[in-house]
Image 1 (cartoon, rainbow, N blue to C red):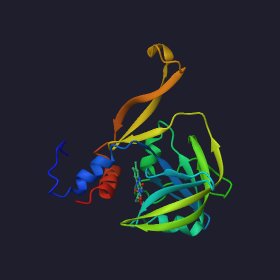
Image 2: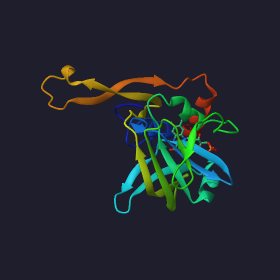
Image 3: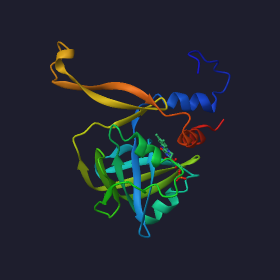
Image 4: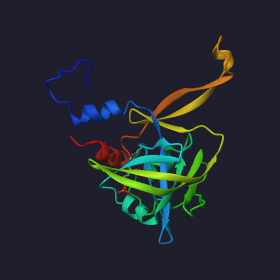
Length: 205
Ligand SMILES: Cc1cc2nc3c(=O)[nH]c(=O)nc-3n(C[C@H](O)[C@H](O)[C@H](O)COP(=O)(O)O)c2cc1C
């Protein structure tokens, strides 16, 4: 990606995804119990939408094999991943036949999986699903939520990052007692099979 582009030349898919990758996000796992079995996928397109009614949204690839299963459940629980849950994220983006193998969870209000040690759980029912290019926009109505006081996992520029709390002494003149700062980026292991999943999703050119 260049800092000066020729406006006459259309931007490439790589420029598009690299640019959007500079918008820092968290990562959530969207999960549901369907026909007695838990299913879920990792998503960083999660966002808040409405306060009244309380709506959240995420975008899911039309090629997702997990979403059609989740959709049948009529609802799902969002687990906002915590700092250090990188591996859990990759499990829920990976090719394991059972992504829940060895994963600790408990059923939320709708019976859907709340992943252990996550920052927050939002139990949702599906409000509506809209078509949007090669993705679908899923709107969930939040029926219940639980928040834990722990730092969130961040995703930025194709890498994971953590938030740390800096003591106020490091920031003279700032009246606020503490602030969260970017602690550093730790990369996805490019040798890992999970990287293929992510590149397959992002690499369209
Ligand atoms: C950090 C991260 C963020 C992701 N965000 C999304 C997303 O917003 N939407 C999506 O459809 N897939 C996303 N994925 C990919 C899915 O987790 C999953 O790999 C993909 O849906 C293929 O699996 P499936 O066929 O079981 O759905 C993300 C993966 C990673 C590692």
